[in-house]
Length: 118
Image (cartoon, rainbow, N blue to C red; front, side, top):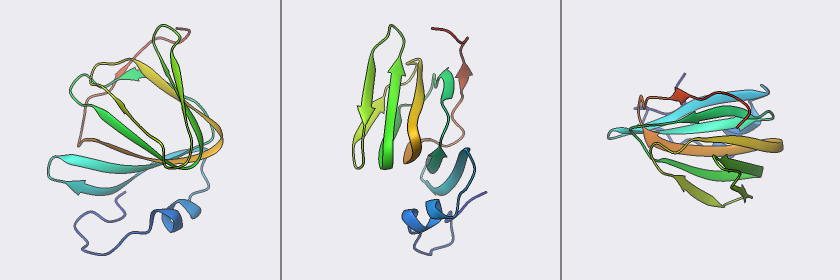
């Protein structure tokens, strides 16, 4: 489902997120050249994974999001914090309560799922 791709209309991310009640949901906001802007609303951890062909930019809009990396390193992001996860980097995201963030990456990027328990 796409909220704004090609519509030419303004999309208010706060309003869009307010209408999402799922425990984990991704919604395409816009495609820009060969990249995609996705709105993510999470209340549960996202599994370990990597994107071999694309960096992934996170921007937290609401709540707190922890990004864990292989080897036990973690970074905590609050509202208006950003972090780039380089292509090929194994990571997972863990929201503290409800978290709303946007993700910018190559459209259709490959996701390689990793085993649990890292």
